Image (cartoon, rainbow over all chains, first blue to last red; front, side):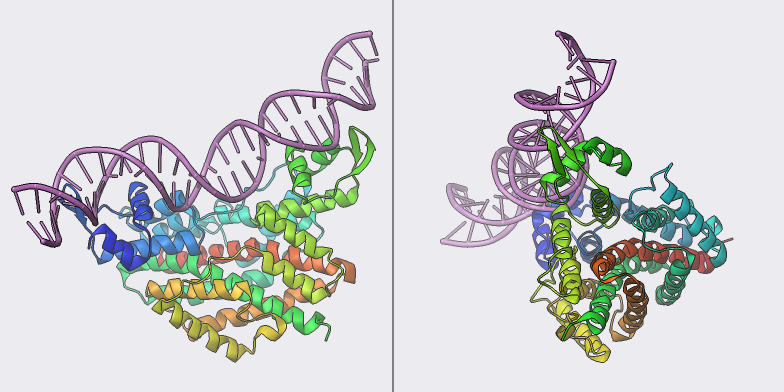
Length: 213
Length: 213
DNA sequence: CATGTTTAGATAGTGCCACTCTCCAATGAA
DNA sequence: TTCATTGGAGAGTGGCACTATCTAAACATG
């Protein structure tokens, strides 16, 4: 496959593919001559993954490079590669320190994690960037006077735990060498699925309750 | 409160507050003299909401303006104001047409909605931007060969429906005039909560299954 | 084989966005 | 009186994801 054919197959412009090559998101093709290179199915697949992460998952290009690198890092075991890939994903800004709302948020989140038995031993603890995002969001809600103590958070956490079991069952169906990519793709691409279903469910429920007809 | 005091109270720089004023995200303060204006608690509250939407919820400035406008639009009923506000929120690009993966995705999503009894009559149908986001994400997963037919989507949809009931119970606790803001704030700010809990749950579950120690 | 088109790769430029800087005249504080 | 501060307006900045232009080599066609 020539670059222009790769472009046709994927629907991504040649200019953008060249950009991804430059940024290291795609391995260079096998050079045939000084002005031609050969790309294969694995390039097409990688390109589709990259596109999906960037456009659907809103993952920044530089982050995508890190995620892609973690996929192939043989020095890590499966769990660590998944961890590295997922930790690289975008997160909200870190919580503002020296702020009473942040203090309260930290406290509630800590209680939550104790109850769930989540901690850094498996990577799901305060050292994870997702933990910071959670504290930031809870602090923002607190500051605005909306309830989000442990009673409100627990149902969300239990829901998240359920989803994660379902998703990892799905990941486990794949052979070893495809698992890390599957974990990343499902983590990132099920996010918009979950969020849009939630918004649609809320719209429906809000209609049932508050629609005036 | 002077602008500089509003800045101190909120932790937002005066330059940024001025920018938000110019962009219509904040009402101008009451002019005291030619060079001074007085801001009140409601400005502080609004500023905190705007900041949370932009920084924590990643809502673009122009969208935030629309959302803010919908909050105060007396010509709409509660459900419609919530609808306008939520529809303005950011979404993935619309699905690529003339594409087999998109076709399949549309079909699966249509079946799902039939089974859930969701449609445009309450706003949760194909005309909603969230519907397009869902189709785009399902198409991307399909293209990569990951399963996301109705069996996979249904549990997510049921989960989303449960969450929406919980959230609207929470919204219903607020008095009428605060409900639309509550709905918007909870919709947007619980998103990072849900996503970070999901990522943490996945990390934990992945550790339980794949960690090599 | 002559000639016009296409190719891969490098460099520079574009458009958007969320601020941020600089300037100003009017003002308040010492 | 003197001088730092204020609110407002406009231009400028930095980051990001492309996108357009250029060039030398090489393929395609008559």
